[in-house]
Amino acid sequence: MESLFEHAGGHEGLHRFIDVFYSSMLADPLLQPLFGEGSPTHVDHLTAFTAETFGGPDTFSREMGGFSHLIDVHRHLKITEAQRLRFVELYLAAADTAGLPDDAPFRQALREHVEFGTEVAKQNSLAETDDELHPLREVPRWTWPSSENG
Image 1: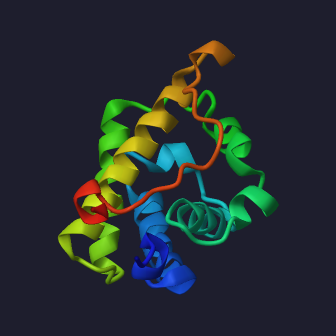
Image 2 (image 1 turned 90 degrees about the vertical axis):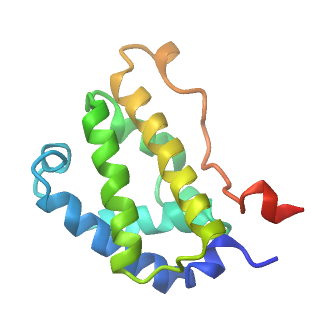
């Protein structure tokens, strides 16, 4: 079965999507404080993370600091629930704008992925101690919804 990475258009499709998404976050008054002026490498990092999560190359883990880097950048951001929900909203809107596939199984996987990821990021951003961090320590592998697997 085709991976989510392949279904999304591979690196090119995901990069286009993340570029649209990142621009929308930087322009959003609720999320912009978390990102400041932005980072010239953020689109590439988030693209590589998403690609790896969706069954593509493991560039994020091998060359970009892996999951421990994600924990470090989210620590102490104090992400609010309103910010988490807005992130999800802009992520899904960017999927439409960037022309990602709109079939129900793919969009369900995309939503579940961003919902889970934002919960992990929020927990890590609020953690005062290492014991309060989410237990996830490696890039999660996302697959098609279970009804598609079987």
